[in-house]
Length: 329
Length: 267
Image (cartoon, rainbow over all chains, first blue to last red; front, side, top):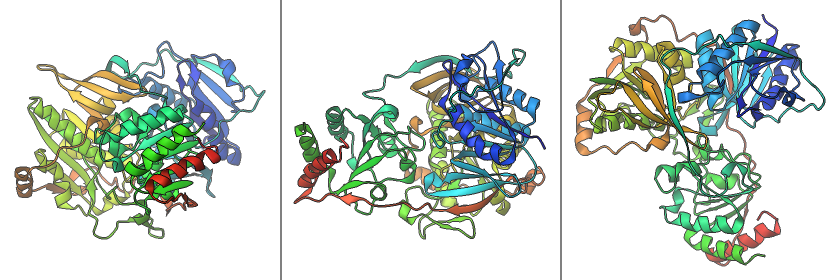
């Protein structure tokens, strides 16, 4: 059996993606316990001084003339090809990938190609008594957690949920770097062609960066109440969010969707109005430090996550709340 | 005529409140609440809608639903037929419970192949039970077909032999041209599936699914090919310590909440 844990890292806009450092910490759970060597394979098109504090045994910088993170069609062909190349070089027993848009696809593609086991969107990992990887992952929209253990002797591919691990930063440590020219690697024929990338102006403060977020859900009953929420957002310097139900109903654009398949937010204060708190929604706000909920149903799940709550009709509670906020100095 | 295969999975209803979500920890199984029927995975219904919109736009096509599972609720699985899909192929097999994603993808690939192949395979971006999002990606690998994930709009220009696709990307979307045949995953941004009308429901009632087992597909023993074993399934404890703010009436509660949040320096 090989003695390598391979991290397939991403570079986005010339920078090491934050998940790379998170994966280093995640990989430590497995590599430290088994004395396996931790190796990072990543697109070499960035300034490698930013590898400081990335405490891995070895870094392979894969140099290619094309943009490796190119995700045309969400296929990530080149990233997949390069990951496969690094895997052939090292024959690792564990491959770790972040569950980004790219990582989700790359991990499934390499697992299919190598006939490997795949555990995705994991929030914790460890080694079991047999020296195989055991992972914990949310299932059923976060309603439950499941522990899976790899069986047999085959390759183990794991994708790790973004933000589940802190970023490793061992100041002063510089990993050993090997540069490998992989320009000979091409992508398979017949891949989709990118015609254009359209950036959509998002309204107001970006959800991911906001310190206060105000979200509305199905309980609002229509698009008009979002105007009330916009007013409140203006007063609180908050970003506007929504549940998937409100977005799917067409009350507000999907760019506002918070949840498992929407945006993940981590504000200090998260105010929800008319959101029952389905697990799929809570998966997107599990990093919010204080949840404040207004909903008519005292038994709603949102209140089992909230610090403060008001049970009542939003149409009566919200105007008074907004007026009182406006009067605060 | 374009042949569209839509992969659809029967899953527990996601609309049940989390308090009613129960698992059998010893049996490593989810216990569906009594009297709540399963649903077709919501994202898979978005995929059915994507296929129907191609037809609405004048693309001549046959839309065939493929599902792998067991204990199918037929009236549930016929929902895609009720809104316009043409046929339903069920791989109904007790051993499907032990299939991993690659195994499921192998079964789907074989079932689609046995049905004469497809020019387009659509599936939801992920299934709401195990939330893995592996099967369509692996299917594209097995079929050596191009893949587009997170599709929010799908069209074919007249006389063209490629798809014009919009896919959700960070901060906006990508416009993509994709050759046939292809595998695509559809996201809820595409729009909800249409409602069935009475005529559609009646027509679906009369249609019979084409059923088969995994053995009928002649791909050997895929069910025991698992490389992962679930060893624990549990509902995490939530530490509920909510403070309900209650005033004289609802408006007063709202006012008091604002004061409370300011006092706690949360706004």
